Length: 194
Image (cartoon, rainbow, N blue to C red):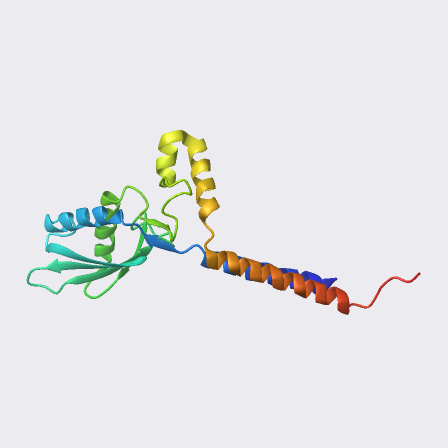
């Protein structure tokens, strides 16, 4: 009996791991406006009096920010999706690059919070619902219809969350689990006598 429990736990862990791979996040195309505002802030001195411009390079869920300074080396910062509890920015983790300092973390974090009013990340492959309408973010759903809107938005996202790779992975894991369970049951000697 203990062996079957171990098999079930292993299969559950494998299914959990497979499920995580189907939920990658990426920056939305809507984030372009936020980064344009950030560049305008940099040009106006909003991210440091010595900063005259900003160069932004976006690759999937990673952003490279170069703060351009006149007469001094440029500062590099790297943005990724928020995973830590540090409060530099609502939606981004900020890592220091060349010539950047801890005070740049605070300044850039405040500037990002000023230009991004909603989460710029979305689940890859979830741009619209099956009926073609875009799925609102949780804040938009809350503003529109309160808790009912949030629940409805979550339901719509869950209905289209699974990609083909995810679905095939889950089917394979469940199939392997069933085959393993059958093999364990067949290999086990009969325990009752008549």
